[in-house]
Every structure is written in structure tokens, then in C-alpha cells.
Image (cartoon, rainbow, N blue to C red):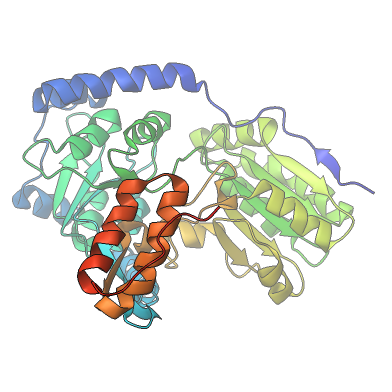
Length: 435
């Protein structure tokens, strides 16, 4: 039978992008025209902050001193894990060269971008982990300039733990500025900083739209929407753990979809009964977010078998995919579309979000069908090069001349002709196009 929805989402996580786009474009245009003064004016308006924008070494040290020792150790632990995994990723990127034809050598190099702009959310939640995820990977990649930007709290500044995390992870500059104005400051090179070559990190819909508009002028990690999570569970899964994991991700925001896909109706019913009870036990703000997300965006889908479960998951292409089922190796080899995969109940999305080492900046809204998450690779330019002997250039030039003329690109053809004439003046070449 076709898959059956025990719970169907009433809404989809699509915001009113038109109004947001117009607002963000206006702010970007104004800041680009007025520079530092414009950015500071928006900071005063939206961040309600008029303190120092570019943190001094003394301010960084003072903020770090306010971080409790245990929290420092936790941040250092998470940083070490993320760095270790990023270094392993970097090791997979090898410069290569190959002799394509005798006498012509082509190669590949991986070159880090010069300046990375890392946006670290700090509004409703202080995203310490986002500082670790974005700054650490930029540092491992070898970016020369790393700018960390985070919203300050009114008359207080950036949360001290974010400052400490950004600093130990390798940020060269920390900006106390949030929202579109923070993104613009990094992209336009304000406050005496180099212009960012790439902008990375999560943020609200205004931050996401600013990155979308600026894409092309600068690189970005990905187009981001509300976070989403899917759990694949069979009869062996623990309903209490499944329910807790769904609630844990639903608390991200009112429009954060969570999905349960299973072939066991009894499990599904137990989870559906338990989720509202777990939500009710959350702190008020977290509970409101989770309640709305579960009510309006969550789905529970019943499938015939594990193949149909896997196909459903690939169709949804979740940002986070958890498998709590038998035969984990089968699932690892079968599922194809996800941002990050969590195999077995011994791991969970929150581990990846905070401290296990894999990155938590991941593709949302189905983008996992065509891209992965943030990694050292996002900061690298894969470039190619070639060189040739004159004999090696000979067959390439002949083919180039004929293909170019067939395409109607005579100027291209003549760049090949002139080399053949110079290098092999006594030879005759048939360089006409042949339909």
C-alpha cells in the first residue's frame, strides 16, 4: 500500500520572502552607500547597541574571563573535536597532476579563500556552537583573515561564551553587530576590514536573505531555511528516545519541521502520545516553539517496509537524518539525501549540533538533494592548471582549431593556428571545420 500519514503537516516552512527581500535589499543598499556610519545606525536601531563594534584584545580577554571554567573546558572539547574532523577532511583534498596526452600535463590545486565572514547567531539563543563550527573550519582551511560577527545584547555586548569560542577557534576580528548590518559589514569590508570572500553561518530569515542577495559578489555556504529533522525508526526503536529527539529539534523554532517515518504503527502511536507531554515539560519559550512546530509542521508517516522508509527519507532530503533501526550498515549504504546522518540511538542530532565534531551548518528545505553542509571544502577553491611541450600541444591545437571553427569561433581557432605555424612551419594541417 502507499505510505500513510498518521499526522500531516498543516503548513510548509516557506516565509513571505517578498517583503523580507525588499527590506533586506534596502538596508544593504543604504549601508553600501553610507559605509560604517550606516551600519552603526542600523546597529543602534536593531541591536539597540552603541558600544564598540570591533572588539579590542582587552575586551576579548575581559569577556573570556567571565566564562565559567567548566564551560571553557566544554567549548575547548568541542573545538578540538570539530578541528580534528576538519583536519581529516582537509587531508582528503590532494593536489594532483596528470599527463592527459604525451607532453601535456594538467593539474589541480586547492587554494583557500583569503577572507571568511562567519555569522554567529546570538539573539533568542546564544549559538556558541556556531562559532566553533564556522570559525574552526575556516581556520583549518587556511583562510588568511577570519571575521566573526555576532549580535550584541543591548548595553551588554556579545555573550562572553561566544567571544571566547570565536577567539580560541581562530577569529582574527570579532564584530559586535547582528542582522543584515553585520552581514553587510563583512561583505563590504567596513570598519577597516578586508571584504569577505565567503559568508557562512546560520541566521534568521533576514540574515539568510542578505546572504542570498549578496551571493555572486561573495560566496556563501548555502541558502538556508528553517532547520528540519527526520527520524527513521522501526519496531526496535525506543519510543521515549524517538519522542525526545523530535521535541529536541522542534524547539528550534515555530516553523522547524520534524518528521517520523516508520513501518511500525504501534511505535508511531506511542511517540505521538508522548511528544505533547514532553513539550509541556519544556521551559516556556522552548515549549511554545516546539508546540507550534509539532502542531503545524510535523508529520508521522507509516510505510510498508524499510525500502519505502528510505525512499521517503530521500524524497524529503532532511537536514538531519536519524536512524533508530536494525541493520545500521544497510541504512548507511542505502539513504542518499541528507545533510548529516546519525546512526543508532547512541548518537543524536544534538551531539552533532554541539560537540561531536561533524559540522552543524547544513542544507535545509530539501537542499540535501544537491549539496552537503559546511566543511573545509566550502572555503577552498578547486582550480586547475596546464602546461605543454610543443609536441604535446600539437594534437590539442589541431582539435581545438577544428572544433572552434565548427562552433563559429574563428578567433579561438586562430590562437591554435598561430602556434602550429610557429612550432611546425614545415608541416601542413587540415584545420577546417568538418560537419
